[in-house]
Length: 115
Length: 114
Image 1: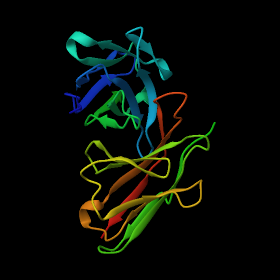
Image 2: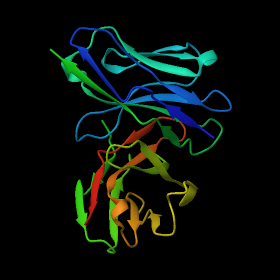
Image 3: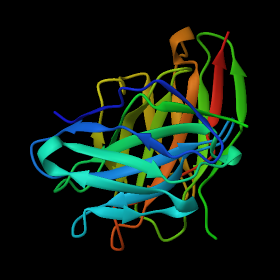
């Protein structure tokens, strides 16, 4: 069965500092991988996704993520955090080969940005 | 830019009442989903819908839940007899079956059962 682990419930970083949010997944094959962001009171916005090919993927808002098959990880990074990045971040796995491609989400990491 | 829209944004209902949450998916999308997020917890898959029938459903999606696409544009989630534990944010999503596996999410409906 698919599962996603985000080991960090809450991370606080200073504005301008670098950021890495961890995500580990469990899946029988290479899944589709996603990072979504949820600002307070808002819906889920896709930051980036990995389907195949280059294991370093670029997303919106200056985010990137690297798929590491050997570690079953898909960590999200940003070199310099902005105050507007404060939000909840969700890693998700989508099952390949199933028509519906339902998503399985991690528990999320709340990012606080301090001046 | 096309988006998934959900109404209402917030619904309060009494325990035992029926509630219908509405969604208008992106017009050329063919896969539709409902997810829910209980406060402070992760987003959980409820059901997927394709070709006018349920494609997959989770164990959460029991007989109290049903989905419908009544008129070719709306996609609804009905909870027959709400329980306190149904209080959550409910997200609708849709996907373009041809272009990608990316699902687009609506802003959510916050359901409060009192």
